[in-house]
Image 1 (tube, one colour):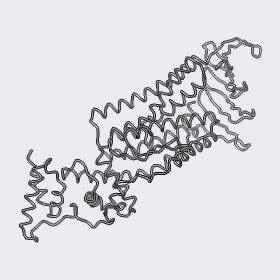
Image 2 (cartoon, rainbow, N blue to C red):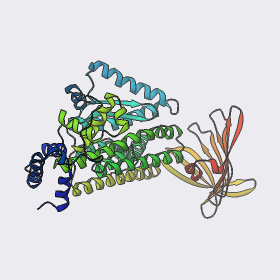
Image 3 (cartoon, rainbow, N blue to C red):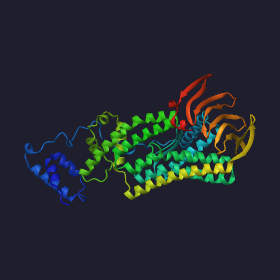
Image 4 (cartoon, rainbow, N blue to C red):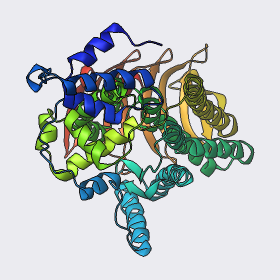
Length: 484
């Protein structure tokens, strides 16, 4: 296809040194006509007196002074970025075991030992899914660590930049846990062992939540990789919006420490945005020269530095930070994409995985109620009046007693019992809706908390702290807690 008149006019407006640089990088086999046009123009300029040649404009690509020397060592630093010196394998094993022990010990602050160990196993299997998938795709320097109060992290460095690999690695963490959870639910249904119920609900809930497309959860990383690998600016906006959405979700769930952790994540998105702008400029530069990919060598590093040299943050950065930014640019522009059909299939896989986790949760809860929860109706005389009561048994133990009306709705006083058979929550209902004062008791039988309801709507929460009662109005109670 003949080149447009606009392209020829653009070539004729460029100075000699810039045309020579374009010709150096231009793929002659892919763009033979462009190569011929530029070569012809270079020959014309060389035959002209220097004073008649076009001058470099301010907005053109000019040969600028590079603030960081580009030598072989700097190119090696970019090429080897993220590759740590190899540690003693015993030291790696020690650090791995220490992270697990620290995770369990910190978990004891909010859970009992059995549940803390279960959460540690769930997180560990999740991270091992990432670990082995990275090994399959030949990532370098793959390591797994458990992080107290947060979860876990698996880090590694790609040797071949492919969207497909990143997407599979993102899903390889949650999917094994969901499958283990569903298998545990099936075993629980037929065995009745309550341990399998705890295993099933924990595995599915933790890994299912991780599939939601909220960055930096695995689902968010997956969507960012599949949809926005070619559109870094849109990807940066998506990340920011999803982090804000995740902070909002943590606020709804009243998980305050995670909310603050994700708030601290926000400033790190600014460099992501600046790198996205740099990647767009580099891709435009590559397209003008007919380059589909960019090998990592001294000449290309020098050229990329010229393209983004007007970025003040880049110029002011230390050498190691520059190496990181250039590594990310080379990684992004060289990443092998996927077809539109593959993109659709990957997104369908994510949707099916979410549906599978939803099915697993529903199956587990239904199996639990069918297997372990039973209601026994009886008539009792209370204060000289005949009333209907429903006794709730779980795994053979009495766990609750409710007063019911003729329509079999909770109506009147009710109580929940703990594992030792003692009162744990004293309640009241009005035609199936929470009503009056609910009292929550601690193990020492002291009142820990009270909540006031009016026909299903919460009015206030009263918490006993340091011997004094703290009142929280309904408007200040987290949204999801108001729904409970």
